[in-house]
Length: 169
Image (spheres, rainbow, N blue to C red):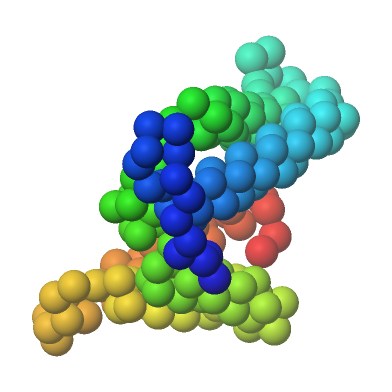
């Protein structure tokens, strides 16, 4: 939990210590994910190349390279932005709140459920819990529509990876 101590700056204004802590935390996490992206780029370069008959076929490292390169660029932008920007009270209060903690808990629960319930069931449960929690207008109609959309999206992802990409889930 952040401590609400006030620090007087050179201009005589009071600045909340939370801004400093949040800024350091954001830079630290940006650096961690920057290292993860560098490791991901390195490991995706080590993926084997298959001799495909098609001349312009993509290598197995194509998609991971795109994802990790975008992660790398995003981390660089995040670190630079936080080095030179002040964090306001409003953005700070929106950054760490109850919804964010609950969503991280749901992600953690999803990762724990995945080996036991397999992809389809755990993904449907995760999608439903997260959308119902974040949904503002909780009517019966919206709940039914979101349930159907969640099941269709999970089935589409499963079909895409298992049937088209031949990736076992």
